[in-house]
Every structure is written in C-alpha cells, then in structure tokens.
Amino acid sequence: MPEAPSNAMAKTDRNPILIDLALQGGGAHGAFTWGVLDRLLEEPRLQIEGISGTSAGAMNAAVLMHGHTTGGPEGAKAALEDWSAPLGPDRSRLVS
Image 1 (spheres, rainbow, N blue to C red):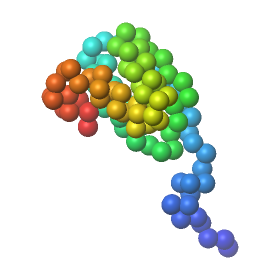
Image 2: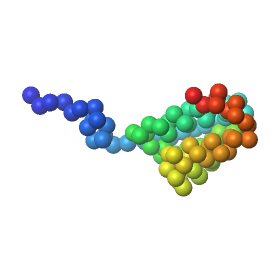
Image 3: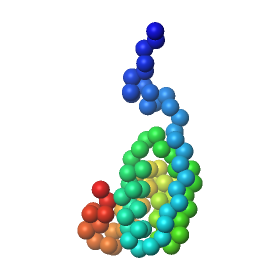
Image 4: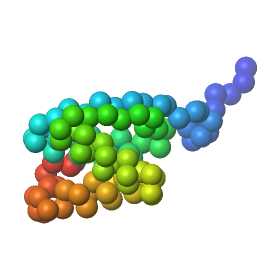
C-alpha cells in the first residue's frame, strides 16, 4: 500500500483555492473586514480571483487590490495598513 504524502508535500502539490470576495459597506463593518482580509492574505493556498464591495467594502477592495497588484499578498497587507493608519494605533484591536 503506498504511503500517504506528508503534510508539507500535500500543501505544495495542491492547486490554489480560488476565492471571490464580496465586501459589505458600513463604517464599522469595513473596519472589521481588515482583520478578515489580513487573515485571508496569510493563507498561501488561497488566491483572490475576484473582489467587489459597496461603500466601505469598495474602498477596502480597491486598496487591497492595488497593494496586491504592486506587491502580492504582503503588498496588499501593507496597503491596507497604510490606508487605515490615520485611524491611529488603536486599529490593532480591529485586526487580530
């Protein structure tokens, strides 16, 4: 009976999981979305194929995709951080 691949091997052999995101509007909802987006960007197997949003969600989508286009997932995280920086250091409580 053949051996099952190790977890490390299984992760590299799989195709990325393509996801589409629809981001909702509303100031507080838009702010809490940053934490979710940060987490999704940390997943190497996930690839954002499409993104849309309304109101605050549209702003998050535009900033995320601009950063992603210029610097991949790390660029997207940096762009979201830069864009939200004027909210002050307490933003960390929204991203966990």
